[in-house]
Structures are given as C-alpha cells and as structure tokens.
Image 1 (cartoon, rainbow, N blue to C red):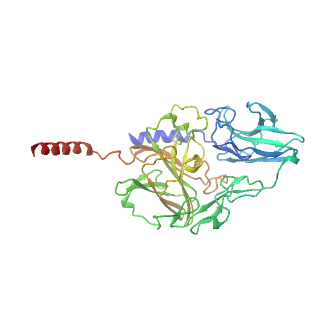
Image 2 (cartoon, helix red, strand yellow; image 1 turned 135 degrees about the vertical axis):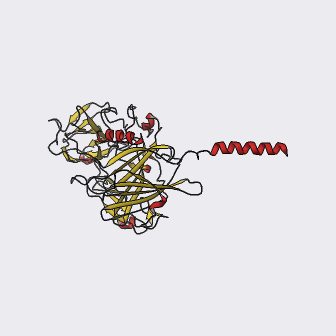
Image 3 (cartoon, rainbow, N blue to C red; image 1 turned 180 degrees about the vertical axis):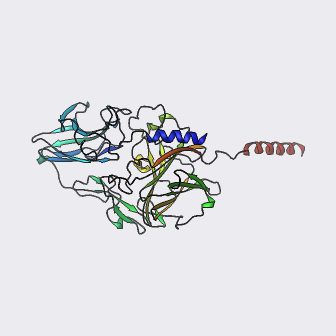
Length: 425
C-alpha cells in the first residue's frame, strides 16, 4: 500500500508546473520568492507588499533588468511600470511578450525616457505557455530621478558586489571563509554570487563551525536505509544521543550537482503556507504540493569541499536558507565529498526544533522529498539550485516514533504495582 501511494505521489510531482523567476536587479520586493504565479497568488505582485527597499534609477539612460530563472518555460517576458494601485503606466515591451525565441534569457535592457521622473513599481511578468493564461510575477519598488539627483558613488561591503552593489554574496575572497574554506563563484545569474565551500572538519555558511563529522567514512550497517531512486539516490539515517534526539542523515547520489532532502509532518495543515507572516499567503490549496512547507537540507560539493545548509521553502520557490525567513541553521554537524561522480553528504540535526516556521520534526509519519541537479542541458550548471527535472521524488515514511510502542501500558502496570505495595506496607 505504501508503494502504491509513493507511485501516485511521484506521478503527481512529475506533472506539476515548476517555473522560477525573480528579479535580481532592480532587487525584488521582500520576499523575493520565485514562484509567485497567477493561479495561486494575487496581482499585481504575487502578494508581496511594498517594502523598505527602493532602487533609484537615473532617467535618460539604459537600464539592464536582470532576473533569476530556475526553469526555462516556453513563452516570453514583459517589463512594465505600474503605479501604486497596480495599473500600468509604461510598457517597456509594447509589442507584447518578448524573448520567446530564447526561453533562457535572464536580462533585458530598457530605455528610461529623458526628463522623466517616476515612483512606483517595476514588474517582470514571465509567461508559461505550456499552460493557458499562466504567468509568474516579480516586482521591484523604484524611483526614477533626474541624473543630477542620482548618486552613483557605491562602496560595497563583503556581502554585496556589482557596479551598484546590487548582487548578494556570502563571501568576497577565500579569507572571508573560515577554517580554510574557499570562496567559489557561481557560473550563472543566481544569488548568492559567491559562496563558501568548507573542507572536511568544518561547516556553516562561512565554514565557521567545527564539525564532529570529520572523516569521509561511515558504517552503513548502523543506519536505516531508504532507497529513493534505485542506485542513483539513497538516504540513510539513525538516531543519536542519550535521548535519541538527534538525526544523523547520509545522502549518497550519483551526481556532481547539488543534492537535497526535505521533510514535513504528513499532518501539517493546508494553511502552513501562511508563513512568512508579513506577506499575503497563497490561496489555500485543496492539497499541498510535495514542496510546500518543507524543511530541507541541501548539499553542494566540489571534491572534498562542501557547502551544506538548513533550508526552507514555503511553496515551489527555490529553497532558501532558514535565516532568509528569520530562522536559523540548526545543523550541528556536516561533511561532504565527491568521488567518481558520486556525491555524499552527512549531517546532524535535532529531531525537534523550537523554530516552528522553518523546521519540521523528524518524527511520526513524515512526507519526505528528495532531488538532485540535472546535467542534460547547458542551462543547468552543477551546484546551482535550479529545476531538477525527473531527478526527484516524494514518499511517506516513519520518522522517530512519537512514543516507544508499549511503553505507556507498562508504565501504568508498574504504577499500579507500586501503589498496591504502598498500601500493603
């Protein structure tokens, strides 16, 4: 029966739309989620309200609009200016949706009129013509000013780069990564632009943590084995600690790209997507998509260097580190290595977490998802979080039992015996 449910779930996930688009510059409104679609979220900006970030742009010049694209759906894009009521004032692509001849486009230059000032919304709309009248939105708050009022002096801190400090990064140089980590640049238009990859023995966003997992070895016989895709993806796990309160997991995948494993309680309510709390939630679905409200561990490996983190996704948006949503990375150990085209990561994480928004307990019946990066197209670069094609799946499984079977009845009997003994004495 469990296998039947697993097959049904896998068929469903393989036939579901996965389009990811989000403005990089001008920067999208918080939160810059990339699955704000016309079916589930509200116009004009997918439920993302106006925030504190307003990008200043000089008039009379060209502006290069850039965006992240996680899946190259058929169709083009449109760029326009909207007023605060969400109505169009200027269409920079008046001939309709453009770019359908190259569905992998991630930038487009627009001409800002001379002697033009404006304060409002720049919106990117991306078609998905695989489905009828289906679109994705990303909005940025902007102010267009006269060149004389534009300050073009920018001094970037280590967390930003670009001629206007417009790109986020986790590091600038190797020295920004602790314990011998390397600062490695991503090859395509994604954020962060650069990330720390940690040697065996350290982990964390900047390799700041010493890892109790410090060798490239394990004894498979100690773990519960969950085969997820034949020989191509395997998950192994065991409980640790005197109270069995720590999960130690191992992912072994036949890939040189990223690997990901997520879980949530099978009984999580449909309205779990209300988080983050300060934005308008998507319309409550009739059933959750396997990616909705998932606590995810993602690992990217280059040889003996690894970047392993605690992630979350509200919906089908590209997973983001917990801190993006105001949470924290709960991993207590991590190590990864890549040999002969096989990626292995090991991690430890508490079974339970006080962070109820970005973490899920690994106990009772959980819905488990898994994925790894695809290699069959130049659009999909190793270790960049993009759509995973058929390299994914979902199944329900038993995590840590919420109570040890039979424990409560034994406790009741023992209590009765002790009570009887008390009265006899």
